[in-house]
Image 1 (tube, rainbow, N blue to C red):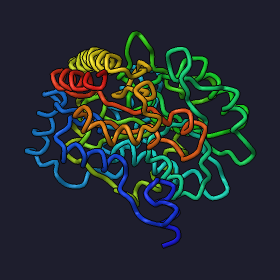
Image 2: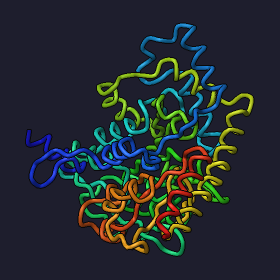
Image 3: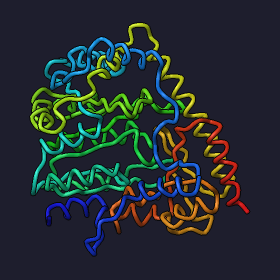
Amino acid sequence: MERWQQVARAAGLVGADGVVRPTVFAEMSALAVATGAINLGQGFPDTDGPAHVREAAVDALRSGRNQYPPGGGEPLLRAAIATHQARYYGTDLDPATQVLVTTGATEAIAASLLALVGPGEEVLTLEPFYDAYAGVLAMTGARHVTVPLLPQEGRFALDVERLRSAVGPATRMILLNTPHNPTGTVLTDDELAAVAALAVERDLLVVTDEVYEHLVFDGVRHVPVATLPGMAGRTLTVSSAGKSLSLTGWKVGWVTGPAALVSAVRTVQQYLTYASGAPFQPAVAAALADDDGRTELWLRDLAASLAQRRDLLVGGLRSAGFDVVVPQGTYFVVADGAPLGFDEGVELCRRLPELAGVVAVPVSAFCRAGSTADRALRSRVRFTFVKRAELLAEAADRLGRLAG
């Protein structure tokens, strides 16, 4: 029980009094249901992904692809993932040894951490961070060290000197996330170069969560850290079909990298889910292989549409009185409630359904209590714009009530 409480406490599920509490995400979603508020807290699309990909899954179901797929993933999917990486980033991967299919990106990250770090070691992440990172790191027994991303010149920026000073003798790995959830920032070439130089200098492993790789805006470019000098042999790259194809419920993810590291991850992953998504794997394979170019067109159109929806929501938030950092990618925008008199994002989120008929989540849910990021971002809340434009327009109109 003590070990379980340690993990749950690291994930923010147990307070100092030992009482198990629901996550703030569950609390806010329940508020949305109870009040009829528009839920802009949960980051999933309210429309489905490409019709041709969904039809490929139907064909797979009907043709009998309903039993266990191969443990490491369908060969045609592993080949398609390698093709995708070569097409977009110029990387050369052996599908048989350097690609592993997982049950979503979260399993890929969990299996990577469980395989490669342990008690007495440290893992460095950016903060705020995707909430699963803390829980999985607690399971490994490794110490979680963070470096804050803070607003600077219109974006959330990485302080390179803080990054360097956070690396110590026990540091084993940097767990990176770009494009970044929840801030929407995309690390710059200079920031990535600093991460890479530090990893090479200190002989660190890097696991990089790139699930929003295709969802970047305004001419911003996503660069996988694995493509930088000295990084291919020490980096595991994680992504999935969920975000790029708006098929989050399919839970088809993957991890790519050096054969030895992928093999280590596979050793753990085979005792987690082993395999899943039998009819979805060939459908995702067809999407990534993209023989007719329909997926590339879908990705371009989706990014353009998300940029428009981002601007719609940002306009509504600013009109309501929020201070907003315009995101460069992902599904999310972070807004500061302090100009509206709310120094605590949690309090604002609990009152938003009553005040404006909208639900968001506090950025503090992605921070460690009392950390530099937590203190600096305490008044900020995260909204998602991966919803239909008409719903976002209604949300923007409702948020206008706050201006009064």
